[in-house]
Length: 345
Image (cartoon, rainbow, N blue to C red; front, side, top):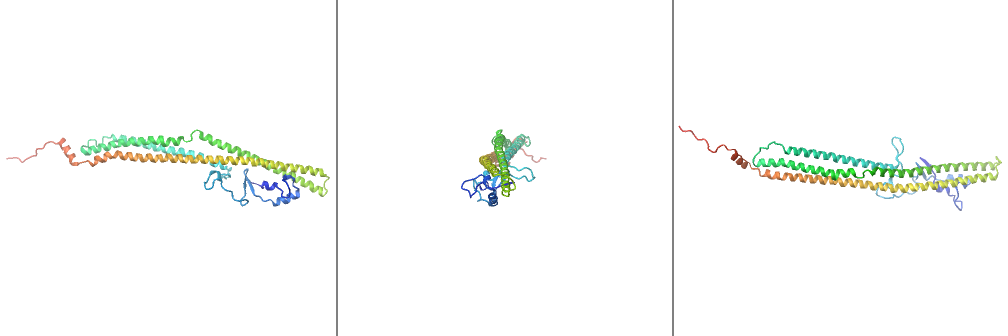
């Protein structure tokens, strides 16, 4: 963490009628002024923030919305001690993770489809089993209808698996396809380039600040030497040193202005891009919600269709009549109606 003083407070001398360069302040006045300056801002990794309690609390850009544009300005510290992760990178990783989870959901639905297909295959195979095929009468009709219902149910599950593939799995797989990574890279490079420019401008400010301090120190030393007559420096030498100090102050103000312009551009792009990533995340969640709802709709339909395959079975089971079955069986298989009688002597 690197700290810097409030630039505007540092550059304004209330005792002067017009703004002056930082380097134009006399050494004694500058010394007294620096003691009065309160540190109100801090610069962390090239970005300047207000210090706590130094100014009224900032208002959120989108109050009560927990918007991305309000909560990812600082870099995230690595608990393992590695390099800090920029806040925008955290948002990008959320997008990439969301894409991966979306893919995993599609894989889950695919496994569900395989189960349905295998189940349908086994149902169809079982429906053709010869087991108990010789059952007769009303019970035989009910048994045959029950076996047929397995074939009908197999068709229902095949249709269910087909709709799962086209209406749930495929949309999850194809949502934001090949261009997704390119789009994320574009956002990443745009913000990273502006952040690099900001860091470069901050380096210029620090360099100019050091140059100003060196010039002011040189001016102060020469002035003190002249006052105690330890040097033969002329008044012209003092004026020359003062001009260099003033120039260094002008350079610092110019560097600060360039820095502030770079930070403003980075800020605007951060807001715009984070809001776009927020919109994309809302879109992703709503898409998944829509297709998972479609899954439950298809599942309810499958249950309804499965129930309909059992209705003919229920009807025939209600019609099973043991007496009628006995009649039909006896008529077909009887061996004779004449009963035995007693033998005569």
